[in-house]
Length: 142
Image (cartoon, rainbow, N blue to C red; front, side, top):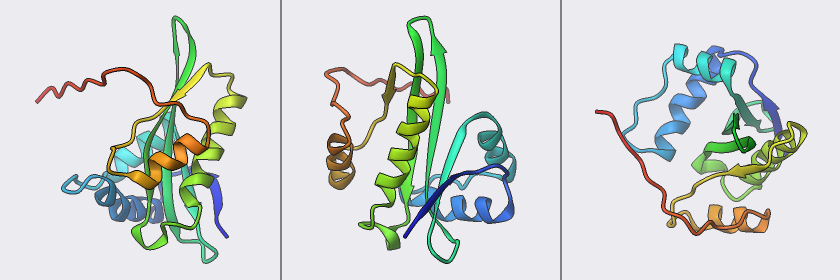
């Protein structure tokens, strides 16, 4: 069984969990600092999934914002620990994000997933996400 909750503070356990999880999503990416985690917790909705022992085995960030066309949200950085995959943790995190977005009155919730993440893509389609016919662009100011 997994419990999903909103992170309310950037304690050492959360920072350590993200240091372990972030490289599983983005190999080579530096783990977030304590200050970075504190900023995410303060400004966004950072959901954590805990196993029966209380260990963090997954995270998801829900970013809500208001555009001229109405309130919107994005799901970012859905990460489930490699050792805990296939147990419904990603689904539990995503469903909670969808519930919170609905509660906030958003018009749409967007997310992206790499094509090779087949299980994640199947999950998002099963949960009612439609694949958009659009180009996604990224700009890196380095």
